[in-house]
Length: 400
Image (cartoon, rainbow, N blue to C red; front, side, top):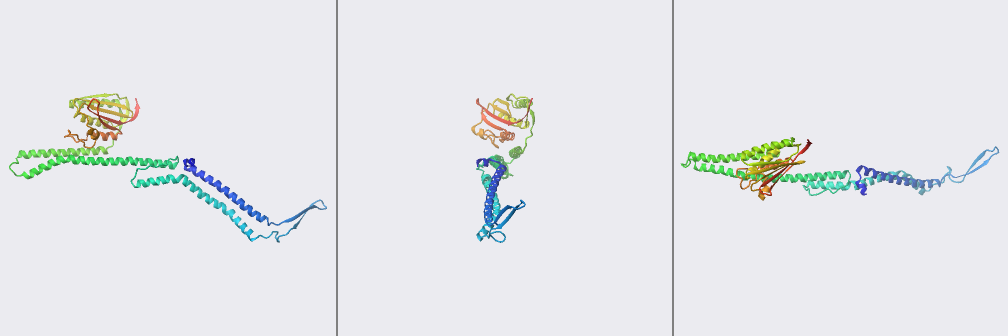
């Protein structure tokens, strides 16, 4: 039975039908043989009987003489009612029993095929569909046979696993959106309070002697600063939303050329900020497929963040271990606090020292890294200072 369950549906069907057909044929043959024998026995017992004599005549030829020995005029003895009934029944059974056995064989074969091959997987799939209809994904399809329905159950289980992943991802997006909304509400409160406060002050003191032109211009300057802050914040929100919807443009990148371009870019950033940026790298002369623009933007945002907190030096290390390009940026600043290590890549996260920034730099890095099939990790270097490690997944094209 176990081997039958592991057979394909086609083989199992043919096997069950073949066995059933053999059994039906045997039963039909035996039943017809028995009925025919009974019928023949009754019929032959009433057959016309003759006495036959054979002798030579005068010409040397054989002569046959027959003599009747009882019975009716047509040469047969009479049948009793019981014998006639039995004969009719056997004649009917000779035709009916093969048909009956065939019908029973079809029913038995179908029932056997259903119970052996169909019942368990169909029941499991039905229960799984009911779970999904009830928004319950905490179940598994336990049918593991190696037939077509087993493949269907495994495909269903794969689909359930993907639904679980998508469900978790969607809930993650919901939670992330809650954080964004909370961050937006918190960050908008300050400039709105400034604008509202100064507007009320102007309304209360309009026309009074203490409202000089210089005072009004000063208040207007504060209101304008708050308005600019709101505008910059709106631009930041739009930028993050655009990044979430953006599709990265991949292209063929020679790692050696990519490294030289990175070196030149870091030199410009170091000169503009008066800090030392040291690059250490050992990349092969290999062509990979990736979004160089996304990698450069990730690097720029991390270094821009490090420049605000480092004392004098930033170290950048680039390595390639197929298929991942790894960029590690370490500064000599105070390092990350435990809270910053966990939350610094969240939307609009700002540390205590952050006043002028909206806290989206590392968020942008995380979004771009994830879109590129990579990760971003925040920790502190053993010798002190913050360390950010970004892994970007690439597609290898050829080795020169």
